[in-house]
Length: 137
Image (tube, rainbow, N blue to C red; front, top):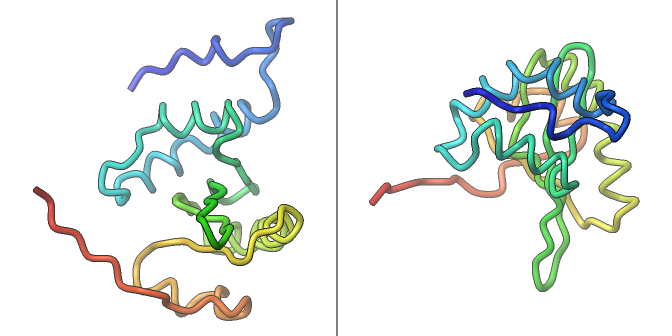
């Protein structure tokens, strides 16, 4: 997919820091999107980060994309994209949890392979909440 990054440049023609980070992490995002059931593409993620509908969190080894989900009775921070090295993901997690608390979220959610249950997420008391099943029509 060809993306016109120029439309996201600052008025002076320089790249904003978030765009440089996105470009650096793009491969991880693309890899994670392979498991997203076609809900997003790279352009969708980039546009979401550009408009602050999505948040980009990056370390040297990983990237996490989050989205604030406001329901009638609960506010959650959801991470639809978690990609890269597990150590890098673990480095980012504390900042995301602090952000979620700061903006008044009652919880943080993510989805992924069953193996995520056995990672550092246990230290933060993440536990399976439901099993997502899909029938395409």
